[in-house]
Image (cartoon, rainbow, N blue to C red; front, side):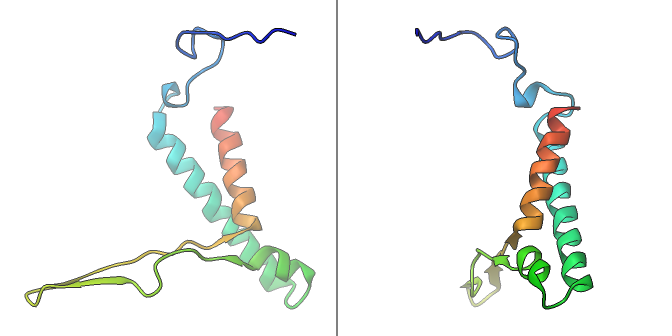
Length: 106
């Protein structure tokens, strides 16, 4: 069994590069973020409709990476506070993957 490597741009190899689709990277990011937001909203709805059950634990619990507490730069003239957090759960991951699938088939 021999491995075959193809050279050249992805369009010449029969595939299509991510940034070469209509709308490019901006459309990809928008669709991915919207997919994650919709997935999170649906997960919260399921958790609201079935409180305290297994569905609540599966869809609403997750991890929240970020800066806790936010970083503060105090220069006496002004203060700058930088921080972010992201809530990642199963529903948001499903929405993210669904957004990637939708973008792929545009």
